[in-house]
Structures are given as structure tokens and as C-alpha cells.
Image (cartoon, rainbow, N blue to C red):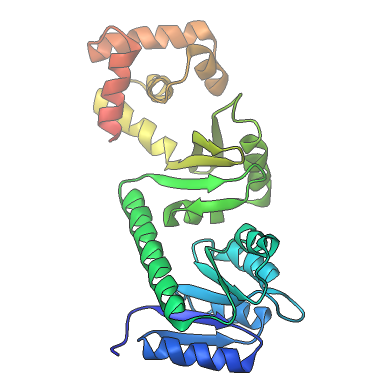
Amino acid sequence: MPKTDATLLIVDDNADALGLMNQTLDQAGYTVLVANSGSQAIEILDKVSPNLMLLDAIMPEMDGFETCRLIKQSHPDLPVIFMTGLSETEHMVAGFEAGGVDYLVKPVNHQELLARVKVHINNAQVTQETKQALDDSGQYLMSLDSEGHILWRTEQAQAIVKTLTSKERILVNDWIKDTDRNPQLMLQQSPITLTLTLVEQQAENSYLVKFKAQDLKFEKQTLKNKLKITRREAEVLFWVAQGKTDWEISQILSISDRTVNKHLEQIYRKLGVSNRTAASSQALSVLS
């Protein structure tokens, strides 16, 4: 059978089972990598990114459930199919809770194995294409639990998270627990300002967050130059376009509400508009 583009990683401490699955998947056209322990699998994943992993649940030293939890911290999108002789519901639940997408009971039926592998590789490909489309459109999204653990993310969102310091990660974790009161968090990473916005709470313990990185100095300078307004007016207008109230702008810029209002009056006059909605529209048009 001709080779596919997919690479699989099989993890099993039983050499016979490992050999049989290797042969079946190789004959089906897959590139197959093998590991006989969880630690060896982690070492392989540091160097290679397979499309799917088949993981034995019961292994010495580190079982499959623990292995999966560790792997999911650095490879959250890797589909993991558990394989085990344990067929009780509690073990299946443990597999899904650890991050598995499917569960095969040994002895594994090879036709069923091939069917499950094909389905999950296709699903993962669709998911990856969706994430790429979101990134390409500037929608950098991530799903987090209440402890700040990543459940799902686009590549650009992951890249942004990698830039966070340990202190900033703590701030994000604290913010996730208090999004009802404050649906937006801003982090200053000179010269970039990172804005996290809660899109929705997807489930009891799942939060969809949008990331946006902005060079505020550049954007304010753009408003100043394009709209022919002063530097301070550009600062006020920028925050108006971000949906901030006069009081919030006064706190950000360390000026009074009255001063903010005076700047707005000058902005309206210079832009030829009568309200903040119209002014925001012009600002966003320039920045886009």
C-alpha cells in the first residue's frame, strides 16, 4: 500500500503487541514510530511531531494515563488513542479525562484499529485547518480552564503565551477566575500591549479567550499623523476606540474626567463628527 503523509507513535511495553501493530499500520501506509515506555515516548515527542499516538494504559514506572497528561501539557492537539485490557467504565473515563480521544480494548481488532486511526487523523487535520484559518484572519483564540491550563489554542495564541513571564501567567490565572467582573485583561510588554478578552464561557470550567497584541505607541502615532490631531488627543481617541469610558480613560492617562471630555470636544471638531461612536469608527478605520 502506498505511504500516507501521516506519522504514528505507538507506545506499549509489550514487544509482541508493539510488533503486530507496527506491522499492521506500516502495511496500511503509515510511517510508524515505536516506544516501549512513557518516558521514551516523551523523548521522541521532543524531536518529532506525529499525527496520532496509540498509547498502552498499563505500563510499569509511568502508566499511560500519567504519560498522556504530561504529553498534553506540551502537545495539546495530539490525538491519543488508549489501548488496554481494562474495559471497566472507570478506566475508560480515566483515559478521556487524561486527554485521550478514543479507547480500544485489547486484544485490538486490526480493522477497527485502522478505522479509528483514520477517523481521528482526519478530525485532527480539520481542527488544524480551522485553527490556521482563525490565525490567518487575526482571531488568536485559546480555551482555558479556571486554573489557567490550556485546553485548546491556535498556533499564534500559543506563540503569544510563550512570551508571558511567570508573573504574567499568574495574572492571567487570577483574571480567568474573575472574568465576570472584568472581561478584559491588559498586559504591558514594552513596546507591545497584550489584550486578553473573554469571548464566552463555553462550559462550567472552560473559557474561550481572544488574544490581541498591539504596539500602542505606533498606533497612537498613526492616529496623530493620519487624523491631524495632537498626541494627547490621539491617546484619548485610541482608548475611546477600545470602548473605554471617560472615567477609565482618565485612570489610564492619569488625567481628570473633565480633561478627557475637553479633548473629546476637540477631537469631534477636528474629525467633523458629533459623537464618540463616529469618532471611534474613524479611528478604527485608520488603524485597520
